[in-house]
Length: 443
Ligand SMILES: Cc1cc2nc3c(=O)[nH]c(=O)nc-3n(C[C@H](O)[C@H](O)[C@H](O)COP(=O)(O)OP(=O)(O)OC[C@H]3O[C@@H](n4cnc5c(N)ncnc54)[C@H](O)[C@@H]3O)c2cc1C
Figure (cartoon, rainbow, N blue to C red):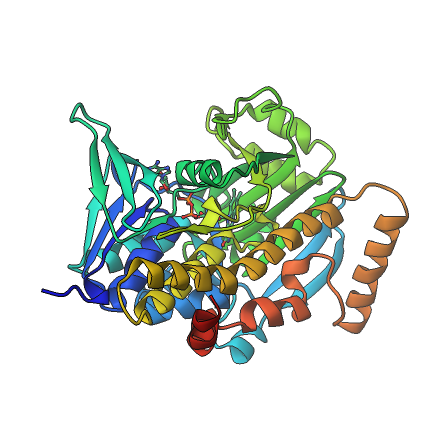
């Protein structure tokens, strides 16, 4: 019996935001054999907040999971950028225009809502099969690629053949390393010299503090900035949790191996990093229980020349890890998935040659955009972390102009209306459909 495009065997490595979205996008396109290999034993999602920007929500809606995900999310009505030391407001950018302009509001929510929503969507699809507690690495990139799966129990490793492998295995992607070896390319993981604390304050912890309660009920994203450091914070989970994510110079990981990404931090060290921030911040940081401080190392890697080799493609942080300052890392992984859904469903036939061409179309559509956002995130970090000097004066002049006129360039780039037009206004699914025939022909 001749095999059809929709019967191709698709192996996905990793069940993070990228892997889950790929599986769901492909199932929705009618693919029937989708196997997801995930190292973790289940999807016990780490708690923290995340932005649901319209370019992400639009895709989640098409995948049929947005209604469930947005239930606990909070609409960000504005973002307030403030001086960390004094709490003085540098500028406030209203975000109420986002929904009428882009069709979806700018929301913030719990990462577990996003991950669970995607996972529940996948579980409703009979085409998707999960293999947990399974570490996978691509071992062959040719016409019929294969992966070696090593179960975490004592069962022996086994080989899986597929027609397509999508490696969504995150910043530490083993498939990326193998692919680059095959291509004879070196692209190292880069140290950003930045680290982050991720903190969640619960409503019952602040019931007697009207100022902190106002933050919880305020429906806005607040960024407190200072030299080399900032804190971004917003309410999530129907205003019952105040989520804070910091960025500071990395001192605790300086000697860490490449495999180390998180560590249990010390509360006194955390308070020390923000010692000159305002009392409101101190009260918030003091609410973190001793022994529950978690610090993340923020790494990226050098841009790589290609995301695909033969019938194998990289997805999400495996090919475009980013600093979090544009709040677009997961959104871009989800855009990758949406575009893969289109290009693979448009395949004229299931031959390795066509698959490889379609994957290159995916790369052509996605690489420039995702890498531009990685650059913008790094630039935002630099602008927020300026110390005294001409560059800071110029930045603060822009904030002052914004305060006066109510519009204009925003140095905190995720909130800049022109940048939002590009980021939120691009419908990558639609673009992929429009561009597919021409690009496929060119490959
Ligand atoms: C502090 C911080 C704040 C952030 N805030 C935002 C935000 O507001 N908005 C936003 O869009 N993004 C944000 N991000 C970025 C976002 O979290 C990531 O870009 C996103 O999670 C990447 O998804 P992914 O699926 O590519 O990779 P991951 O989420 O890393 O998933 C990879 C998966 O693959 C599995 N895996 C790894 N290796 C193997 C293997 N060999 N075999 C099998 N499975 C394997 C892992 O267990 C994991 O489940 C933030 C990041 C940080 C650090």
